[in-house]
Length: 444
Image 1 (cartoon, one colour):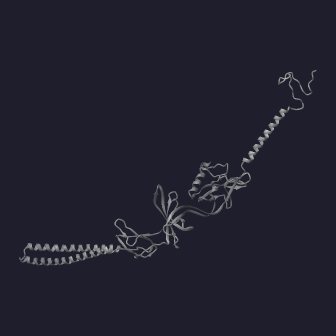
Image 2 (cartoon, rainbow, N blue to C red; image 1 turned 180 degrees about the horizontal axis):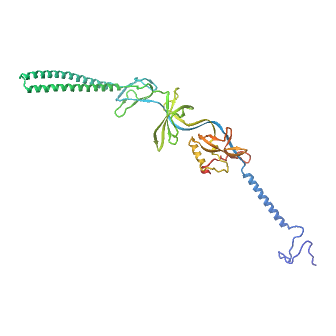
Image 3 (spheres, rainbow, N blue to C red; image 1 turned 60 degrees about the horizontal axis):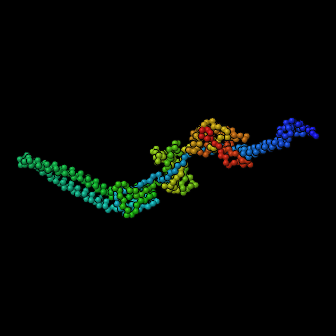
């Protein structure tokens, strides 16, 4: 017996699966179980994706920016350069010798105070004494020869005058008188020769005496012996070059530092500029001085051009010694009691802000790296107001590589300028991996 379809179901003559030629349609009771599971699965996938996106956003997003600030202060800004030099006496006299010979004694040692004319060393004087004695003997011979020739002149003159009278009486011939006249003239010429010979012998005596005096090494100045280069028995030879026996400093209370300044830093250095320096033995004691000379002659070593700058310094306590190495700081320009801010504030640029002058940051960086600038130029600082950075234009004066002078602008003492921008971590701490963002060359 055939059964009728259950209520709520419709029977089609053709089944989708080909069984019994019937198709089952949805009933008012709801969708089939397979469709319900598909919708649940889609909802779960959407929720999972949303959760993953939320987790990624909360774990990878950056926290709000935090700014590092520094106050605008009032103080001194100086443009200076650093150079290495050597401490030397102002005047050092090299005491040498013009004659050669062995040293028989010396009386001036290191640190000996000497006066003008004081005997410092003695070269063996015997060879020079013998030369002087011989020259004196030659002078005596020349003088004796003059006396002899003067007698001959007197005799020749007398004979000539006598025979001149006899010639008029016809007793003496003219030939005899002419011969006596010639003898008289020769006698007078001999006197002239003898007088010249005496002068020559006298010059030889003087030269011998001078050389004898040169065997005595004496101090030409008042001062202190800083170097002695001889020993007893040492032979000094002055044939080709004058040997240096002593170095005498005239005054060690006045010293100087001889420095070499590169051609890139020499501009602006002038006589009278303030200078400070330290030496290795007193690293915590700055010595004060002033530029005394800026020499024009360049020195070139391996294509590096430098100029000699001399710094004068007082040394009343004798702390400075000749030859010490000095690290010198020469102040080319200095302004006192001016508004100043860190140079970082001029190079800082907030995230997302472009420079309005390409290359401005590069030029400022180069100037700071070179040790500062001494010309006024336009700049910009960022001040934190109500939690937001606000640009404040300023005129920048002197720069020393760390601080910059505010020559003109709306900044006042105590304003907080931004010097760096750091990123806070997820837990509220500042991330150490975020470097401050500054102007880049080319404005990027």
